[in-house]
Length: 340
Image (cartoon, rainbow, N blue to C red):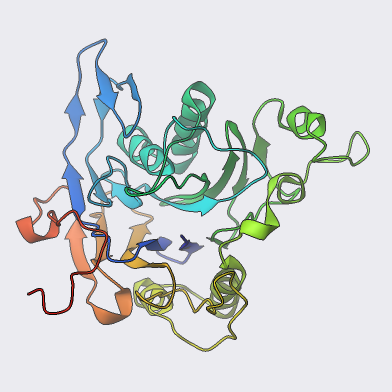
């Protein structure tokens, strides 16, 4: 199960773009929630946990698998966009906790900028942890990386259970299903180095800054991400100014960059993945341009299936969605041939 996310600054603001890769044939409709106020003591039911509700929530537009409460990616009325990717580390994943998709939606509902969203997510991790299955018909658990973007820039947040590291984006950044933060993090969770040392994952001399990737990542479980991540980095390195159309082209990309070995014997293709090529496929995509002017409308360009086979639809945050974009049948299996 893989996803790819990029973010980049340009002269107008910040671009966010994500391909959400999910089990093949899983429907991923859009969901729009208006801003709301809640009574003291209110709670909210996430996928597996019920937690305290915030006094006020922002209007959000998100893309979520049909059976999930949380979002694979989304954007809010204040101009914050967030997407997650699966990350496999040496840590076990708890049977119950917040899913990465829960954290995406909760932060979008509660934060007006990327730094606050990061703080919301790390506080929720500290209090509730992450866990539970991210697949409807099997027990599939993972930790998460997040790209958290606003009009002024972005943060990359990478996690393992309740521990995390965070890095400010300079000009551009990409994440996939592998750790991208080494010892170049700007913030980290309390006790993360001691936690890694206690488990024998970090044995460098005391005083050496922790390398999150070296200490925590399980390199055998990168889900074929190296090729896709390298392709995103090449795109960002070679592009002078990433814009909406360029980000769409990248999410649709099938340029031959060389296939890399995959445990099932099938090569992992570029960032746009089709059903049948691998156990997962690109179920939905989103591109958002967050302009530097706070008064500009927030518009998400949404693809409802593999992006190279469909159009990106412009969806303003806060405008009611057409019903066909919000519904999907609950099946993760293709229909039998001749089944109508």
